Image (cartoon, rainbow, N blue to C red; front, side, top):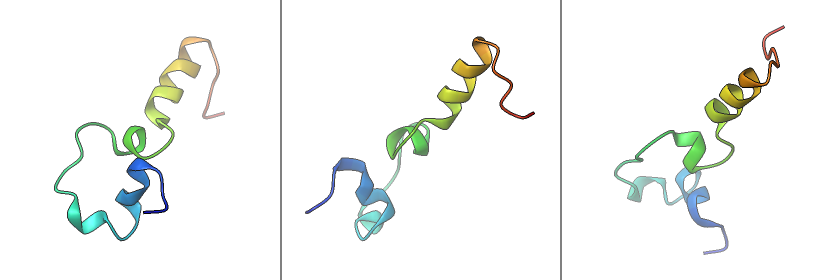
Length: 48
C-alpha cells in the first residue's frame, strides 16, 4: 500500500517476491541497458 507497482521489490515486499523475469532495472525503474544501447545507436559515447 502507498507505493506504485514494482517499487515493492526494493522495500518490505521484497521477501514475498520469488523471482523477477528480465532485467531488474527494467522492472523496477529506468532500463539502463536499453538506454545505453539506444544512445550507442545514435552515436553517443557514454563512457568518455
